[in-house]
Amino acid sequence: MAYVISDDCIFCGTCEGECPAGAISEGDGKYEIDPDTCMDCGSCEAVCPAGAISQE
Image (cartoon, rainbow, N blue to C red; front, side):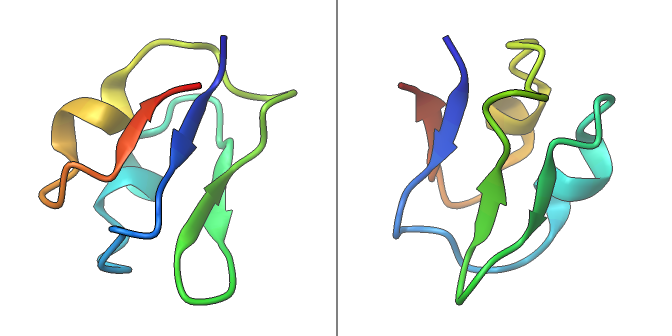
């Protein structure tokens, strides 16, 4: 089950640098996770200061 980023994203970029799979990229006003690339490791969720990342 892939992780998703909600509208609570503050567009800080912390999660993008933490993703070992490179599944996170800048979207329109928030970051987005490619579900086909996401490894379900949860490292992005652990570093998000806004709590905007969760499993689908």
